[in-house]
Image (cartoon, rainbow, N blue to C red; front, side, top):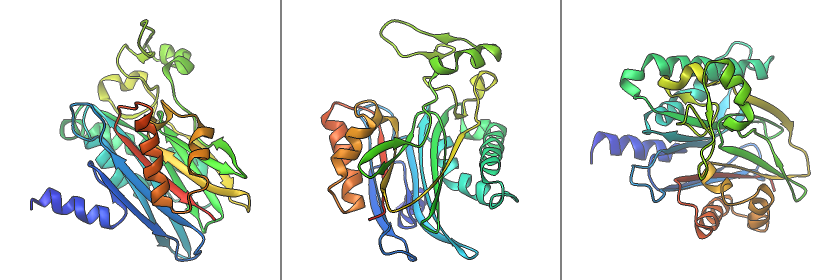
Length: 283
C-alpha cells in the first residue's frame, strides 16, 4: 500500500472523504439525536474523482463543533484536497471567530485562497468550489459557500436553501467590472471568460482577476422544527430541486443511508458528475 493510500485511509477514518468512492457516518457526543453520514461517487467523466469532503465532530475548548464541508474541484483535485486539510483550521483560528463569526469566516476563505494562489506551481491551475457548515453545540449553524455546491435545511418538511449559487449570469456586472466577460453560447451554460461555470471559487489563478473567493455566510438557529441538513455538490442540484431532495430522504432515519440514497436518486436522473453528499439528522 502506497503512502498516499495510507493517508486516504487515515482521513476516511477521521471523517474526511477522499478523492474516491467513500461512505461513512458518525454522531454527536453531546446529543444522541444528532447524527451525520456521507457518501461519494465518481461520475462518468474520464478524469479522476475531484470531490473531497469533511464530516466529523470535534471538541474545541468547551464547545462541540460539527464540521461539514463539500469541496468540488475542477481541472484537478489538488485545490480541493488542500481545502479539506486547511480551510476549517484557518476558520477556527481566526481571533474573532466566536465574536464576529461572519467576518471571521469571510476573512478565512480569502486568506486560504491567497495561500492557494501562492502555491499555484504545486497545486496546479485548477480550483474548487466549497460549501462549509459549522454546527456549534447542536444549536447554531454557520454556513458559507463559494460556487455552486449547496446547503439545504429541512425545516418542518420545507426545504430552505442556506447558500447562494454563484452563477456567472447573476454576477455579470461584477465580473465585467474586474475586466472579465461572461459567455452565453447556445447549448452551454454561462461561463466566466468562456471557461468557468461559477463566478466564485478557490484557486483558478489564470481567472482570479475576474473571480471572487468571498463567501456568502448565513447563521441560523437550530430549533425543534429543524429536521436535517443536506450539503452536496452540484451533481445533485443539476437534476433535483431542493424540495425533491428533502422529500426523498425525509422518512429515512439513518443519515448515511440518506446520503447514499440522494446520490442514487441523482444518478437515476442521469447526473453524470462526480457527486458528494453529507446529511446531518437532528431527529
